[in-house]
Image (cartoon, rainbow, N blue to C red; front, top):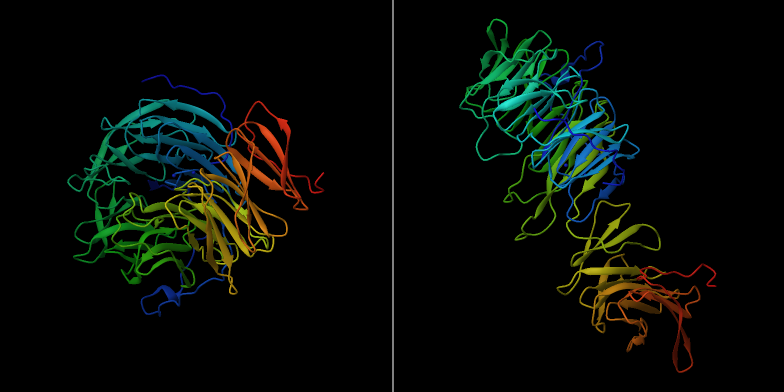
Length: 596
């Protein structure tokens, strides 16, 4: 075994994860939940409800960054998110950033250890790393761990890691040292006492994400302490451990069986010939079983076999206390939340996605306290024939009220500028060849198309909110006017600059617009009644910023030549004075509120 490397403490910055993994601790001791008659097949279907809309806090990461993986801590309200090469850990509901790490290799998978504080991630280059979230330190790393599969053991001293050489390594999550090598390619789950591990001997070809066991071979039950294979286990789903020591398995013939791993004795729990079983979930009381088959989510009484179908859906998951069942419906797209204690259901619409676009299945995971539900789903962000018209989005739902509270979104284009509307009710940002207006109190996010082939780089609202100006990379300036119903309409396009426009700003009275460009000039445009722009020259390099004085009578500009230039209007034209010169480029400038 190679020596385990160590790294010095890592700094903290802001930062986000293809698979959604959830480490879930056993529920606290107490009386199991009871489920009344609404869950029996004779009950009428619950009436879908729509919660009142409340704005969600939405975050977008850096350029071409997207949340590819998400995993909750099993003991803390912490959510770890990973993008192509960045790792973020957030506290909920404060959204305080607890840990940030940037890596050269992309993140392939993440999982928390059983202690809920150690986070383990595998990179695309086969490096395995562990971070201690409270101290924000990297604990250890190993560069010899290609493969797939991270499963925490209930024993906090053990962590199963699949290896590309066809073995499974049991590591100490605190030190990274190896305890044992077990046969198998991909770890699935530990028994509740951590003594047994179910593994896949082989995976399906094509390296699918998430990995899938090959149906050609039976699963294996392996003793974690010795590596001895206890017995083969025929199942098309990961086995579900029960409180009585049995393992529930789904068969290809449409049956669900309870297997005693000590004797091999099997009892048929549920049978539906001809269906394809896709997943099993168990409630803490051991009586009820959630079965997913042929795209259907159903609740089964293990004692009687009575079945209650909830409808079509996928990616079903249970809250840690077994009280809430969540799944995603795709026709029409909706998130379904079912209270299994009362039978009450909520269905909230999700953004539609073109069914012709190939995309991974959504992934759902509850936080350890059951309050928050993370939903990772691929949504449409660009129109075909774009190379990647869809991208992953992670939305965080408040289960108590059934409403979205947070969202982590991809950034497929750089953000060059931001501006709030004067009334503070909207945020505008150029996104490629359009401007996205986010109304902070509404669900809609309209796009204003920019007529042309260049990206928007700068924008500004007039003080009265009637005008929106956008500077483009081709040197043009697009002016929009707000209509009587609040809609934005293209008004005119100004052509004049010979280089990208990096700053636009309205005068305090809204009658003029100043623009700064990489063509080394500042221009002043008349909004009303219009006319030829005024051209101000003097910079010897690109101009980055320009600002009006509070009374609107002066301008100040800065640029790549390090010069700060003051411009003021007088009879017959404009005068100019160089106020300062710096040895490095100057990028931003502003007047004090009193203009002095």
